[in-house]
Length: 529
Image 1: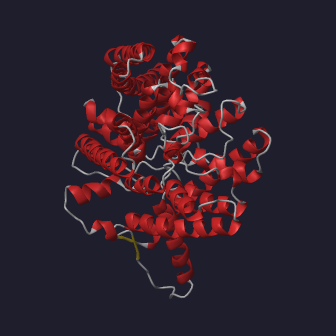
Image 2 (image 1 turned 90 degrees about the horizontal axis):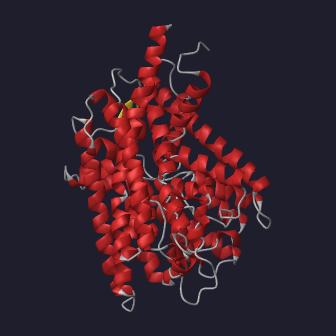
């Protein structure tokens, strides 16, 4: 009995130590929004980030340095660490919202809003810890649903923090942890990397792989920033340079992470420019492509990957044809004034799971909503990218498996037909295994969306339909961030918690959270089924 207790305690310590490392990284990250707050002379926001950063870092440091780990992890432990780690980061990441909302005087907060504004600063919504937790979870999971009705009225510091949280959450908090803090055990690094990311190695060691991912991620973000600054200067020369730079750095981070938070009151629609809509298509598409794909292009100089890579090719084709189809459907409905502009932008925003918005989806016809839900938000971008959704590679595998299964009826019983998919040759038993795993995940994913849709339907405010409920639920589960208006500070707490769980499970692709729940309620011992 004593040995068993010690083993459980050692496992618990090992899990807590890894989570402590994530909290240390979170504490470090508070420095950047703190500096932005100082630049814009937002004293109360500066204090809020300083206090929050110290709390996160000290808790993480004390636990990380004082816990001695003697046990080696198993894959289930890595999945539990991923689930608990992301939940802990989202909880502690809510501290700046709460502290700043509580210490900022009313007259100071109102200065963030335009002088002619007839509304209260949205910063005060974050006095509610649940709203702050929602905003934090939405940020770190790169979702983009928000409790801030009028985003600019929360101040530059919090605006930057929201975008920055999406950026560091996009490439992965655990990947960042591995890149910054050296692990004593290569096994721990390997299992943690696989629990959060695609698991594809770019170098012989996981540490080198994590660092390469962040170098690529940073490089593409910098490119998007320069691209947006120059593009905005050319399209809107009257736009203030200081505002242009602030918008561009925030939107570059939100675009590369496919997060979708914006510095404007009406997202990208706030620019009121067709040319700006076109400008913002590229950052969304860049964010939806696989980071290993970029590694092959940038480091290995395999430029043919732009068309040879199955996921990249499929995303580009889907954006073109999906945008055109949605445009025609919006045109036929007659409910949207500029159907082609709206259709192309919103389809790209949905399939890349970025969530930037230029149209009120609530007024769309049901057929157009169903297309963007089933054909874009649920599908998502590339595996290995920062996107949510099922991932386009799984959708392609399901279709490949369907045709393969049908063709088997026309083959001889003695024929062993090798399947070629995504540059891999799969034997029949391997194809069955891949299809089983993909189909199981897809079924669970759609089940989550269905359950959330019914919860939304019975808890949402008046004036919304079941189609709106499906749209909002799919947006939360796919970490998309598009909204038809259901998500707001007046929503039911039960519905708000539902979306928080969906964003959490959507970012980690469900399985780690199910493993965590199984461990909490049934323990970690294997069960005979």
